[in-house]
Every structure is written in structure tokens, then in C-alpha cells.
Image (cartoon, rainbow, N blue to C red; front, side):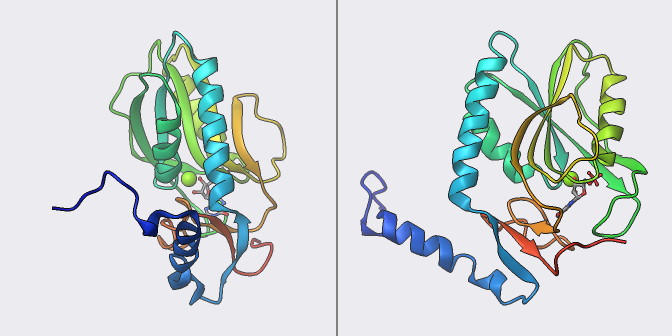
Length: 206
Ligand code: IMP
Ligand code: MG
């Protein structure tokens, strides 16, 4: 039988740090994988922070977390466990027409929610807000379902053109470079990187 009650030498902080680096070697074989934009430890602390703020803000009205697949699944999983309230979960998936690295703003719902939003306190969980076009579509769509309140928590936000009042919680503001990791992909890969890294040459787009 394996005894998991006491930490072994492999759990020492040094060993954990080493494992974190070793765990990313597979990704570093791709020359397009660039430098760390947000480190694993920074994400962990910030998610704890956001969870504490959401816990305080939603006292007496636990939110329904709505995750936008696929990118938000890693963030939502950690965020939900940092919220000390009986939250509920639902997911939707959207596809946007456009290139693989730029959204056109024309968005189609690929998987809709199972839960009725009427009267619910909805907290939309997004991986990243780039142009904000996907978010604008989602907010219009969800608001039409008459939730009691609607707010957004995004792990990352690039420089937004105009402020979005519903964007109440943002993990990190980052430059406009294309990034991967912690749920974010390029061609469905790298979602399982623990940190956020730059991908490709700086400034992708038309
Ligand atoms: P927006 O409509 O331009 O705000 O784009 C939002 C969506 O595009 C996000 O939910 C992501 O799925 C995707 N996206 C935008 N920027 C990045 C990035 O740097 N890496 C990976 N996906 C991104
Ligand atoms: Mg997304």
C-alpha cells in the first residue's frame, strides 16, 4: 500500500520547483514557444486573490459560474476551488469565424448552457479578452436571458479598445502578443502548460 499521509523528499520546495521546469521541457522543443509571460506561481497567487474577492462580493448570492470552452477550463477549475461559496457550474462553447489568431467578431454558439439563467447571479469565466468582440457577443446573448446580475472574470486581458463595465475581475493585463498555456492553445496544443508563455513572433495579426 502507498502511504500518502506524510510528504516524502520528493515534495520539498526545491524538488517541486525542479519538477515545474522539467514539466515544461516537452513544450520547449517547439522553437515558437517563447518566454514566460505569467509564471505558474503568479497565477496561483492571483487566482487565490480573485477567489477571495469573489467570495466576499457574492456573500448570500452564490454565483453560477459559466465557463467558455475550451480555453477557460483550467482557470475555472482553479478559480472555483478558491471561491468559498456553493457555486454552480455550466459551460458554453463558441466558435468564431476568422483566422486562428484573430477573432472576426462573428460568433456562433457550438454548445449552449443547460441551466436557465433567469434570476441567477451569473459570473462568466473567460480565459482571455483580446479584441473584446467575443465577450461583447456573449454579454448580449446572456443578458437577454434575464439573469439577476451578470459579471465577467477573465484570467488575461490584452489592451482593450473600450472599457467593459461587466469586466469586474481580471487576473493580468498583458501585451497584445499571442500567448499559450493554462488553458490557452494554438491549434489545440499547450493548454496543459502550467504557465502562460508567448507564442510565435511578437504582434500577430492582419
Ligand atoms: P476576442 O474576441 O478578440 O476578444 O478573442 C477572444 C478569444 O480568442 C479568446 O477567448 C481565445 O479563445 C482567443 N484568443 C485571443 N487571444 C488569444 C491568445 O493570445 N492565445 C490564445 N487564444 C487567444
Ligand atoms: Mg476563449
